[in-house]
Image 1 (cartoon, one colour):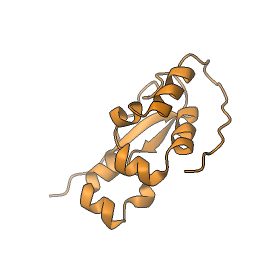
Image 2: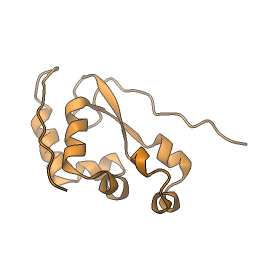
Image 3: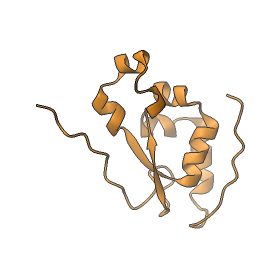
Image 4: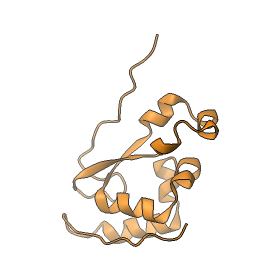
Length: 111
C-alpha cells in the first residue's frame, strides 16, 4: 500500500536563521538530481520528496550561491550538515540579526 508523501509543515521562522520571514522550500536533495542513478541508489523516493527545509529568501540564495546543487544533495542533505559548513554558519550568524525584509545581493562563486 503506497503512502502519501507530504512536505513538512511550514514553520513560522526560517529553519536556518530563525527570522520570521517569507519562506521558500529548499529541497535538501535537489529535484534536478531525483532521476539520477547515483541519487536513486542513496535515497528513497520518500527521502527525495520530503527532505525539505523552509528557509527565507536570503538564506536560500546563499545556499545556492555557496554550494553546488550536486554537493548539496550528496554532502549537505540535512539541516545539521548545512549548519556544520563554515561558510553557511558564518552567513547564518551574520543574517540572524538583520531586520525582517532585509534585501541581500548575492554574487555566485565559481564552484
